[in-house]
Length: 210
Image (cartoon, rainbow, N blue to C red; front, side):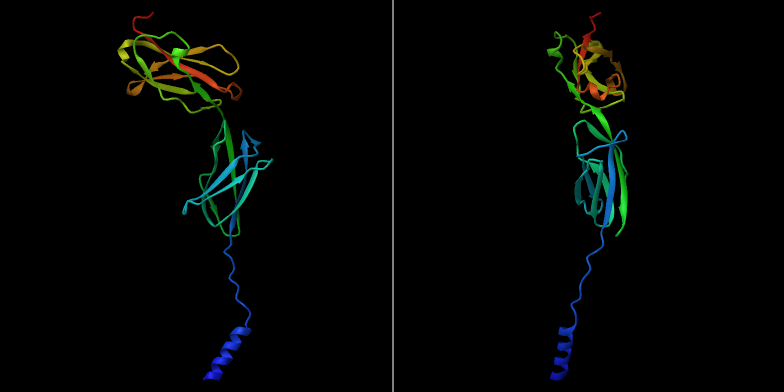
């Protein structure tokens, strides 16, 4: 019996070690553009849908990026970059072992608004008070729609939104109109990227004003 055990041990020691192959990984590659032009220095984030794990890579001078990831399904997005927001990107990117998946991200330029205190721009107006949540960003080329609540509404004949761009000092205004839910809405002209930041404020006029 002892001789049999010795023979088995000798055979095991003489056998080459068994290597465990690392699990195959996949990759995600693509390009980041803004209106079709490559953008460098943008942080791309790959989020594993199952585990929630995140991987970050930065786009190169040509806008390209590539990351090795475990097989799975990924959401592709970018971390915030001043003046830019994701316009188009794949909803979900499936990655298989040993395969390379493609993802293209196109960003949109923003025009950044700066709300101002109306008291700093014009004399105080009696009547209603404008309750307005400041807008975080305007999308270049699209009409910004602002909304506000007026309290009390019967004390205000009309409301205007005054605005100006970074290209000049003159203020312009648009008339606001009542809408659903007792809210008042105003649509500004479509801004250009070079006009950023946009400065604006609401101004009510009392019912006794003409």
